[in-house]
Amino acid sequence: MIINKSKVKISITDLLLTVVSAIMLIGSYTWFAVCEVKGDTIMSCHWAGEIIKVMSLLMLVLSVIHLFIPEMHFKCGVSLSLLGISAVTLFIPGGIIDLCKMEEMTCRSNTRMWTLIHCCIIGILAIADILIYLAIASAEKHRRVSR
Image (cartoon, rainbow, N blue to C red; front, side, top):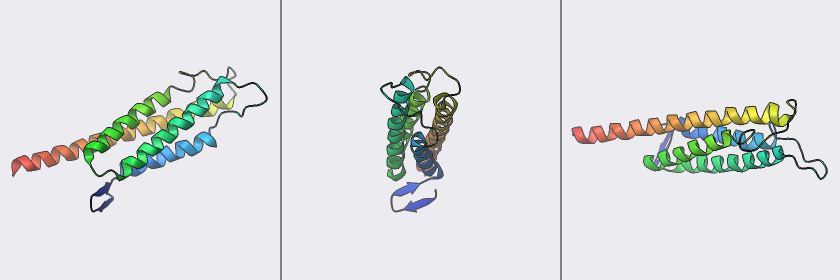
């Protein structure tokens, strides 16, 4: 654990989940944003970008909540929800919502790839976080039984 003040316990996976979620949210507006709407035509990739922004915000809010929750079981529950949300977000660009037909477009070259990378990292961190807290809970239970 990095910080252990009173009841708040923050581990490295807690911090990494928050940082990666924040990078994903910022990136969905800047580095891997879909093309801007031009004129009256709104392409389907625009809606994929909008949903990715909302899902990124949701992951960031859950990551911040996860950061400050002291109970391990609640942390595992929030990590499970982060895992599910990242799995759904993974399939938004090009799966749930179609992207542009041209391979050179930003939505195909950047948005899909970076969404895949960030969602996989968040999923891996959530799984690691769950396993860490389950191991800690198991060790505490074993310690209580052996007394």
